[in-house]
Length: 458
Image (cartoon, rainbow, N blue to C red; front, side, top):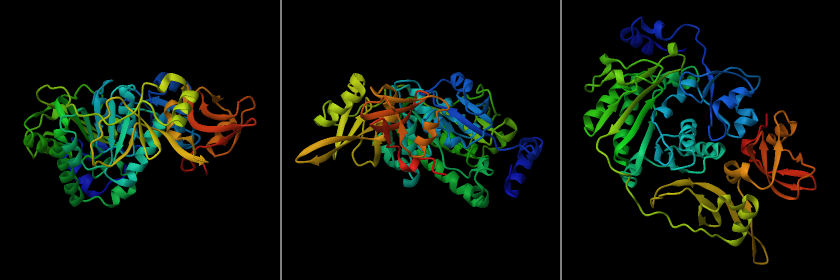
């Protein structure tokens, strides 16, 4: 792993055996994928994975990629949301939050979306996940990845932790804070992180992390769980932030992660902000098989149900063209959803959605499409890619592309594909049963509606 004198000297002073013992020379950066269990179970994926994989020690749905002939992001399985390309140790944090179906969950610093995908899958379509990203450009990337994974019960926001903490007081059962950090575990993957590494950056990150935790703590209900994680080794950002949070929030206690099955405990000598039970923390170093991660889990003392707020205004019926289209294309399977209609855009809301006024919400649930004018005072419904990524497998008409079908590669390049027996009209396109968006069939061909920004153009 690449490193600078700041990291090496600190590790030599802190770790038994020094830097060399925890950062073995010649250890390559591991590539990995995490299976989206809404799409496939891990054994099923491993049996037909398009590359050579090995089970990850950090996550039951994670795999280390030992050999791949093409880029992980170009395969149809990736486009279909079957897996998410993710450094193996990065998949360790989300499962430790312990999300259960039916819960209200917040992913505070969610972009680009790997942990969001894991949390959404853990809900199994029941409950609701709020995925937030403060940086607008990164929030757009998060939204695209949420569309791809197909979880119908995700709200994507572009907000500050302070505003969320105020708007959602006592609302969440579980919160993940995978905080911005100095990124010492990402030096090989992101050279810019190494170039900007400094004590000043570490102190700035530590201050931001403590601000984020303090701001979002009110949003957790009594009895709820908060997981804090970073991808850095810096004690100020790890044990230091944990100690500072516990000192400032006596209503939180540290939970034990020692049975996680990977990594090592925290470091007692780094607890400069107050006493921390370091055996309850988890650190991952390269010697453990991952690039690097730190995790601490807190429980808010007491017990209370999540706070109740007034639900949004929603309608079970929408404009006739949209209702007719959804019924024709998907049958009764979407009838249980509440619909919201905003400026002609039809959104399928998750059950129990709460949308506070004034927050910047990029998407609540599934964007089904929009009602547009078709001339002479009439309207028609135009579906959106998100609708077919969430519900494509249950569409009444679909083009089935088996594994190895050359049409899949053509489709992902944005080309029309042949479907000789397909009736005219909108169709779902499936690869091995997994969704690749939709097209419009006409005279034995399917016109491609796969978004241009997602296509394999190189």
